[in-house]
Image 1 (cartoon, rainbow, N blue to C red):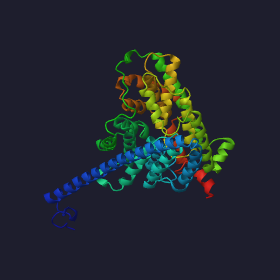
Image 2 (image 1 turned 90 degrees about the horizontal axis):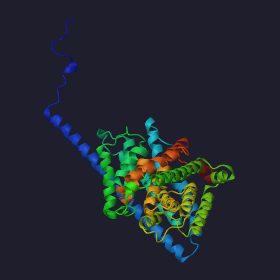
Image 3 (image 1 turned 180 degrees about the vertical axis):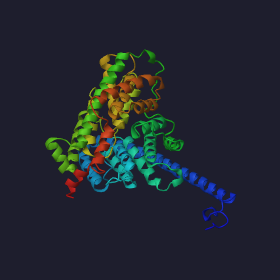
Image 4 (image 1 turned 120 degrees about the vertical axis):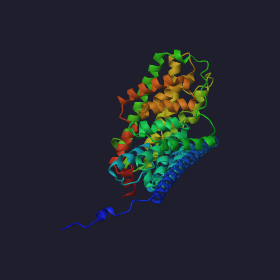
Length: 467
């Protein structure tokens, strides 16, 4: 049969003319700019939430201090009752908001690889509300917690919420959105944009192969700018004056001693924190699983007792105490020698209680206390503040096993660029020592969330509610 004249029917479709191509190009530009505006709006929101959370926690710290001064023993009431109420509210209305928030973000990022969802969502606007209100409430009650870790979950949750509104043409992966949101949260909380970017790469992504695009990095910077607009161009702990210090002659034995001390202490803290999250042994573990609210009340009572023994120095974030040790250059009013140990115990018990709250700021204050003790024991000639700063970076690096993030955070927070090599040495060595004692803290906690389907408090929740 002779084929018909002309081309086949499939080739009869006319080619798009210049007007159609122009419309498609305009649509593409519109989608790109719409996506950028949505992403930048989310970054602005993270910055504003960081400002709100900072103001709220500072107000709670001052209020607790005033009440405890006017009514001696107030914290023996606020910590047990507040801890019990906060844990009950967390289990009942905000499951997934307990603890730091960083493991929750890592668990959500890990599960997305198979396009599956956790049984209990760990990132939602409801958790944002619970994390801020209950986190501030835990600080007011007297628990030793911080707001920086929670800001990671808050930032990631906000980015997760706006992710559905981004045009598909942008092709921004959910993992990158969560990493950007979490990093923007840490950058806004500490006012350290560079550390936020490194935190996203080193801790959240766990690999340099997850390259952050310029769009995502811009979101991190915007969140920091918004926070800076409120706080001003300040450093978190002020400016550490090292003009009269010969940093090149800092004794290597002191650096090694700081790395060893912080590595052992930080590794022990991480090991114990993982133990409390995975399940305490014996009757104490049974009590926690069966009666988590009463367990939180007991933890509150222990935190109150430690605070009373320390002279009311271990309540809250520890920001004021760490800043005092860094700014008291002449050692006119040193902190008690046992402050670091007291803060260590109070922070670990606060973590075990299940109240929402992070360990970043308390870890920095623990490190500062350990550094002060090391300075006096070594009879170092340099300023105590320098040794405290080194141990702040070392202890944080040992706990998180993220040494680059740790020394950059401390460097930016004290404007201590003159100490960058010393901070780097102590952080890297402390992280190595910690790895010999404990597995990575946040990755281990994230694995617990994955095993339990979305909430580390799920077994306790079932035992308490009977469900």
